[in-house]
Length: 453
Ligand code: EPU
Image (cartoon, rainbow, N blue to C red; front, side, top):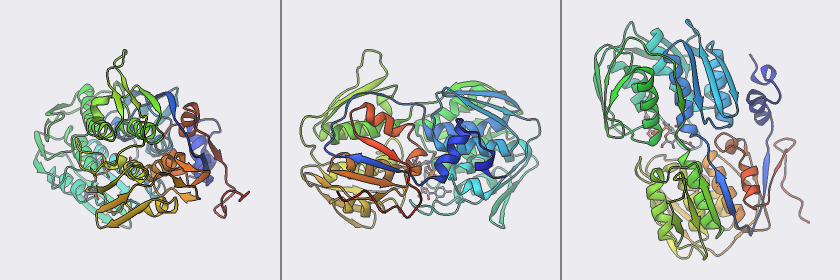
């Protein structure tokens, strides 16, 4: 089935197809100062897994505060092809899972969104079979699946790859003690979603502790799972024989919230980020404070924070680490900030080996960056200089838009379908904060940038 042809205009399904066809561009006006209020929706990296977890039981589950982003449309399509009915309206997803769904997910969808792999655990746990296309590498590194597979094998599944698919089978999974070599977000989630229906007790050690994992644990426990240890590196799961559909509010998107905080600092602005949980950004907000920002986390309604900046930011040294460390997903924005900061800095990437690729684009904007292995040395320059650049992934795209806001003239950021994957209405939200950002529907890949006049 062709996604574009099956899509309805005006629905999120229709939007997914439109975005996919167009090589849209953001034309970003420089010398910007962001001021005002912005509200964040639920986290992309939580909602996609909650959607996959609905497969663990027949019936209709409701997920509130879902972001209107391309990745939610793609995951909706993954679930539809498995036989589910998915509706998305006003931030609420309703997912009806049939008694007897399909267990196969094809390459066309998985290659567009790697998180599709999250259906592997639920499918094998509930139906004893899953056939999911292998995602392959992507623009931020090789991103293996060895820990996902090893965990499922320890739970009793037989897993092999064939013709580009990962195929997992099991009569009934059984509990096991599993230690992850690295606190992988995706492996923790897949193993957890499989273990909730396994027979007996599973102990998963050295798990990821991101707020999105806690959200998934709470969602699964609401469904009737028995998981203890949320927020710690050890999760203990007592398997149950069945689960029930539920209603749940997605955890706020800390990466989108952090992007607004960085944008406020870079543009010497004053932005109140509503609906966010400041505690999920402790390390980031501390560093922004060290760069000279004034940060207020005690807003009267208790949800969100305000970031104000009067001067040129001071440079910050950043080391990305699993939560509660500095998130790799905000590393491109940190480099963009350091590019215009006073002083020099070192940014160390410890999670994805390919995540410095986008620095070549930032250098085109006049940034002074030297990459050596997993370190980047940045010398701040007062103002960047506009040029056409390309987004290579969601976060690199957002980092380039932020850089464009503090360049002189207009910066065209191409391939914004990457940004559409994770930032709901990015250009509208930026405009509401006073930026001059327009989406240009580029005719095709031969677009050569803005006119020189
Ligand atoms: N890894 C392995 N083997 C595995 C699993 C992971 O080697 O079996 C490696 C990866 O190659 C990577 C590292 O471990 O170098 C971390 O990977 P992890 O599994 O933690 O990340 P992920 O689940 O693939 C999620 C988010 C990413 C986010 C990372 C880290 C989703 C859909 N994606 O990816 O988000 O950067 O966790 O926090 O949840 C983004 O939103 O832009 C994004 C890339």
